[in-house]
Image 1 (cartoon, one colour):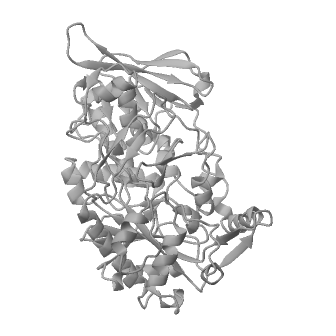
Image 2 (image 1 turned 180 degrees about the vertical axis):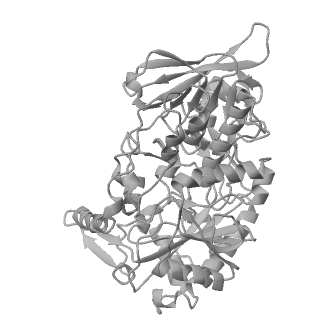
Image 3 (image 1 turned 30 degrees about the vertical axis):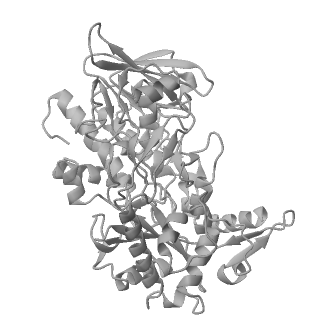
Length: 563
């Protein structure tokens, strides 16, 4: 089986030859391994997390100040699994201790992943690029003009117009037939209806990431340290004072050696950009969180803040396999349908859609020879490995009402915290999911997809096949069909990796992303979101890094709305 997969990957690598080499490696002189860092250093800004928000923010702040970025992962450059569209799923499947992906399983039994690499989630995702809606921007209290300019700054480097072909082009028409109107053509904007969006994969299949935005940086004022795991934010209180102030961090390099980075003083700040799991985790490890929980782990309480780790949400996702009798091209997400009822419909196509969402490729169902384009037998184990010919159509509940929480398991920042998302605890979320699956059914049965479906396969067949191949750790019932879609939603739920919350605005941080009750400390990442903006949040998280970086830069330099 492994040999068969190797042959397939080799063939696809040839197809994507021009995207197979890291021709865009910028060879940043300011990116270094943390093992060579001094024991003590001083900076104007310390950014914890060189991810989707951290990279653009650090690049912006370096225009005027000395900035240190501490990234727990390695570099994306030179890793062909990250760079190549054809290797996207191999990238997600790289669970090596130093790989770009750190897998976790929520307490709900859903398999999930978080990034551990410079560039963050933009290095491991499916690449779709789409802005937040005007209403979402307004609800966050952001300036619309400055937001647009920040998006354009990002797009100049990492965004490209997607170019749907065969099955994907047909899906666009199918979604319109299914009722997701109008057809909006190509746009980065978030609009009801069906559209072709942007992608961080260029036309040759080469991935561009948030790390590429570091080319905007002033190299004399920026230091990025890789394999630098922050263990604690250094906080101090004046004698008799009630407010704490951040003045530095403690981090360890890959060899386990401890380093300290301090703020130079004045108006400097520590900025957490460690993501929806990392930022609340680090606040707790530093003594900011629910007092009883921290005390139970022997952590000194600096500030009792019971809302740290609360409001965790992961947009529940369900998928339906749509096998095709005709070959389909390998494609990441290029088309999306946006419903005013509160759901989005997206897709993946090509041989690699099975492992992409934790789908079992060793399931020896008798029907596999009919439904899949190729199969191979592992002589040693006798199991059947299957590769899929067709599309995987997924729905995402846009604004789930269900909320969960995050807690520490231990005091090790390298290990995942415990997180519960409480998928479908709110019955309204189930109702939205059912409506989205009915839309997917109409799309599969549409005239537009007629030549890409097997005429003898019913919708009930596809629902049951999908349920038997998709993997999570939740209880299942014997069969699923179009009459029990509510149960399918709950039992076969997946992630689309858009989890957020834990440091919500108005609860843990204010509208300027300053941690409430603590000076010189901000959180600027998806942990502050109460919803996932746009159909896919990466565009907005990158924009946010630029937007907030400019606000800080202009304020300290006494400039007004400069860009």
